[in-house]
Length: 545
Image (cartoon, rainbow, N blue to C red; front, side, top):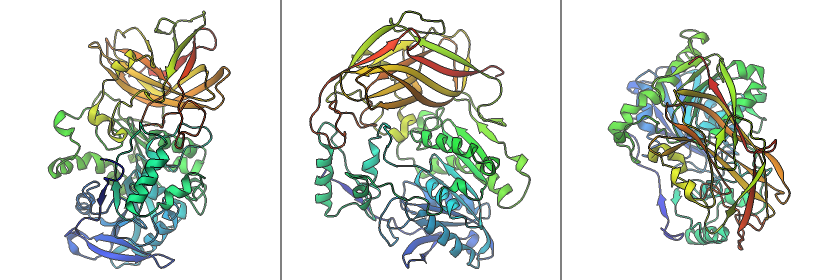
């Protein structure tokens, strides 16, 4: 569809299992809130709060089915459209009201006949963020949270030279344009992108406050009025990350921040699953890999989604059992069944292995003394294509990225096949020296599992922006964390490029800001291989698997 052929989605019909209330916030704005009571009885009990911007009754998040599952365990469930979304009143504005509105909603809950004064929260993505925001409000009735595939800096436009995700500005124009949801397609071949935005806003007949605060003059929106949640009292948290979640870097950044706050570190429980942002799992069979999952499939998948949270709440909300009953870290070794446990992440028993790239396209653990300069092009009008259309559902398609190596703008470095299974567990980092004949450049590094049949699955990735690229510059690229079994006969491959579009906004080659740039120029990019400054990849292997 074109910019002016958008789809507008309003609120769904009420759930027969819920009663809708309009909860008044401190400034008088009323938020639409569905209350689910087990058996319809208003006797006091524990409450799970879910605050989301995606319609508390809509098919996308299937909250009524989740509420029903929670009610079967005796929980009261409160699902709320955040301020300015769907049935709720107020201005539609990302992030800034979630701390106070979370506090006020919890305060309302504990005043109801059906509440015993204990509240927990659950949810993915933005409704994982609303949990961190509520925790920052420091309401004493919030006993535990279970944020999944999210981060405290979720959706913030890239600053300080980071590579910009293509979804960032669009999110303020789709889900956070106004109360309803809007869906339309950006034409990534037509610059400047700002013109298409203005065409969309003209067609809708209204602007987006969130977009206008981000572009062209960015304002860092105030997310936490009382300061970072990690500066306040700790709340027990079951923190779930997906190996293939495109938002995982935000989650891992929070893990690192939590480690710097002893009280939060003590209350932090980490769970890492082989899934993407939309909860498709690596070992799901073809019958489960459908974009619009039917109700029967959703119900069948609820236990793996919700049971860890219910077990956590049983201890930290209801007081049944002990904290030691919950593993500090529960993690899956992707490619294998089941969850493993450890006291720390990474677990004990890992050792670092360093691979060096060679000029002939190899990847070796041997020392490469001779340095060489290899080049490739970055053409903004023909960027390296992103491997999936929907970056949030990577495992829905499980794309074969091997063909990208045939492009002139992708460098490929391949190691020898392993003779036996190797368990890759822990952080992945790359170091490199690069420069460009353009003023700036982006550098993308992808780690792949190359199978004997020639197909390649991406298992880790990272990217960095080089703001002064004219001179050789040493960079470090964080590829995140790995928990992956590389099978015998498979090999590691690294892809290096200067674009990954449209998942990330492609640079125009001129040094201009990419969202509003009009002109484009093709750049020649340079990478050093071999010698002390050559491309190296550091990863960890679990020895006691």
